[in-house]
Length: 234
Image (cartoon, rainbow, N blue to C red; front, top):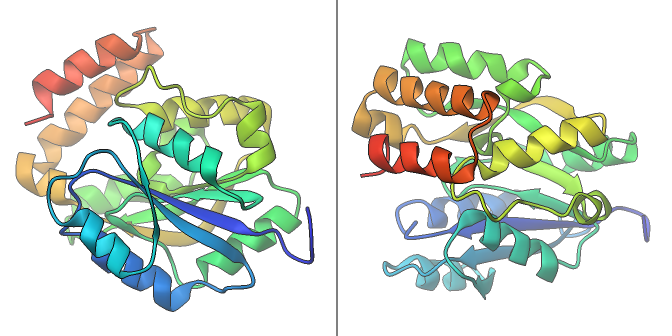
């Protein structure tokens, strides 16, 4: 790594996230450490609400991209100047002192990892599934847990597979598990349970389980998206 500390580029893909992006950027503004963080990149996939104006109001670097989270995150990584990439969903808040936790993990030799997760909900059902994020196995991973990775490893592994409209985080992390010693940090991000509240916690978790199973049985990105678009997307 160059310099005294590895610099982090925080990458946030958005699409119509006006209800959440301000809260996240406010959290980042009050918790990032300038000597560790190079930039905050908000990669927009064509928002038509107030997301862009809000992001600009917080001074984030705005990048316009084609729609598709994999495409947006890859473009953010391409534009990033930091040595470490930290991918964060707009409706997920990082834990206190997350920057120092990431830096310590990188300095300890880990090239990729994530945090544990909790939902912003008192649902015992969701708390039960969130508990499993402490287990260091790829089946317990997901994009809501955020992801840090050295830019060198990201480049070597060719980043997110843009054929995946959904499941892009899981597919990429699955490849990372085969390439490096993936680190699960004990601190927790807090992610929104909005989709569960809208559809129902049991039903949505069932559909996510089916998608995991379909992937395990060899379904490709088109088949996964077909199921997602019929059963989950509204």
